[in-house]
Image (cartoon, rainbow, N blue to C red; front, side, top):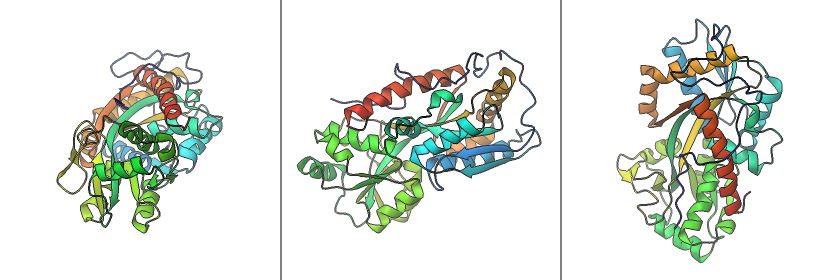
Length: 340
């Protein structure tokens, strides 16, 4: 029996900040260096993917909340998109072009951890300054409303009989969406490596939606919030969600979880934020304090509710340890399903 709860840290290793000799500061802890005035100019928040996806939505929610909660010290925040390679192009820019710049932040998450491995990126998350994890949410397995599949079992029966019979679409190669496809096949007793190879990677949620609606792929996998509008409109049918139990995927009625559908699998897609390498102790403390203050604000709690995101907050040392754990774990999972 297979059980993957991919939002819970297990022992593993990556993502300690380069130059992390200074101790990171967690919520409620005392900084090793006094926090400096921050920000002192426009805060740049990078979404390392295209518009319409989870990272883009998270970045814009950060921007909105920081402004609404008046946390920017009289400054402003801007969001920009840098697309490609599961976020590793944006990651490379952050690490190589913005060293020591505390006014550059980047949204990241489980997808990037897998993307670093799959894309054999020469730059990895150990070269960033960990700031915090923010949210977690279920994945959804969705088909067009005119699809022959009305249950997850029907879909799984097909891939067991013929692993190449279904063309899947989702986010970046090696990311959460493709991991879910491989693990679902493995949990069902299908040929996981062959099934995972039928996956087409897109740079953002918008492209994945378009591919499903146009028929370029027959099944899409994405974060629940990314497909909620199409599910609500009735153009897309949600077959299952990947959390512990069923939940509303947009249509107003609960969709069963993969586990409730008979397959021992759970997966949560988490997202967080990092800063460039080389920050001084005071700058690091100031960045972490800003995100701690954001997390404590009423505006952020409202944003979590509006987006139906789970609060999955860890900051400073706790975030760094979690990032470390995720890297080794995801390497293992990707190897198991033939993507490592």
